[in-house]
Amino acid sequence: MSQRKIHYAGPWITEAEVAAVAEAAQNGFYENYRLHASKLEKKICEYLGVRHCLAVNSGTAAMHLGLASLGIGPGDEVIVPDASCVATALAVAYTGATPIFADVDPETWCLAPDSVRRCLSPRSKALMPVHWNGHPCAMDDLLDIAQKHQLVVMEDGAPALGAEYRGRKIGTLGDTASFSFQGAKIAIAGQGGAFVTNRDDAILKARQLASYGRTDSVMTYWSDFIGFNYGMPNLPAALAAAQMDRIEELLAKKRQIWAWYEARLGDAPNVKLIREAPGTKSTYCYPPMLLKPGARVTRAELFAKLKLDNIDARPAQPRQSPMPMFQHKGDTPVCALIETHGVLLPGAFCLTEEDVALVCRRIRELT
Ligand SMILES: Cc1ncc(COP(=O)(O)O)c(C=O)c1O
Image (cartoon, rainbow, N blue to C red):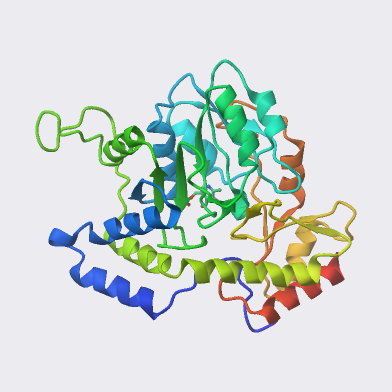
């Protein structure tokens, strides 16, 4: 076994982040109890060019707020891609609405507009483009569908902070959007998330929902509806804020890792790299690859052999629709293929070119 573990995912932390967290631990209480969370919100607003940001304690919470703040609730249907982190459909379920599962594009693994059209019904109220693995969705087509059918759009940009669609930042294209600062994302806090929107009504509602439904309408600490406790603590916010100062460096490293894969696996016969669509810029948070059905190994065999070299590659996430808690069963053959043949290559920030070269050499030999 090679000595060094080739990690699937993990952050790039420098002295600057360590100093920021130490400073927050020493001074981030009393009147400063939200200082770092506010700083993080300001940095995200400036970076994305969006009016409002609320730092919360997970990307899942941000997605829930993104839908709930737009009035999505029981009786509504929300169209989501079947291939995603299950958090996407869970956020829909938290509102009492029903997730309806659409297929994805085989080239990008992101929501396929044609499949979305087939999922529409009189109860459709919202669309959730998930910029899966950091690849931007086909937003022009999706926004067109949303406009024609009066759907609100909540972008799930969990791994896509810094991704761009035709020169516009992901997270600024729909009504609301969410990002994740979980430890395997681009900028990290360990756990955490951001809710963003340009809509004044949505941020007001999201702020209330995130703090116990508090409106203070009768007196201080008064709630008028059932809310949640979704606020982001100051310490992880300090970490994420310090990472935001290095966002360009972080994105450049992820794209560099992808370029190393592209150079060595781009023409490999039995695998297909899943690339960003033309006119878009992915974060390549999790480098995606399809093991072609004609390959000499199964996916399980591939992972087992890679493990012998201390290489941690992972399966793409399963479809959500077969999970027992969801009623709608999707007609999603591309997602089904990804479920059995999708591979997420190691993409941790600590990888070197030699690490990626070893992964590629083994994949070529094995497939
Ligand atoms: C596409 C997608 N959506 C949502 C989430 C959930 O974010 P969090 O773990 O911060 O709740 C993740 C990953 O964690 C994700 O990859």
